[in-house]
Length: 105
Image 1 (cartoon, rainbow, N blue to C red):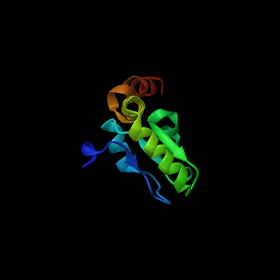
Image 2: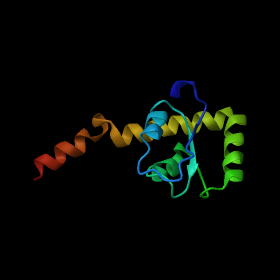
Image 3: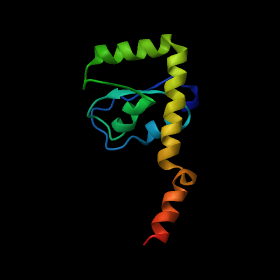
């Protein structure tokens, strides 16, 4: 289902860590969510999507409309979302630091 999306809209009022956001990012989908409502806010703000003030549905609608009308921006955020998830979670990108930590301890 995620592959069929243009964006992922996180409407959660409270969520410790959104695995669905990670999955969407891995599929190059930009994310729109509320500040303070999810544990993925830090990396979304690094260019994986747009965070809006908590429960501000007007700004959320504006962000969604902007992304849906700007394919270039949507694609840019989606590509960056994928690169962030890859950097954070794929073992290949972490291997050098893991080996260094093992050898230096």
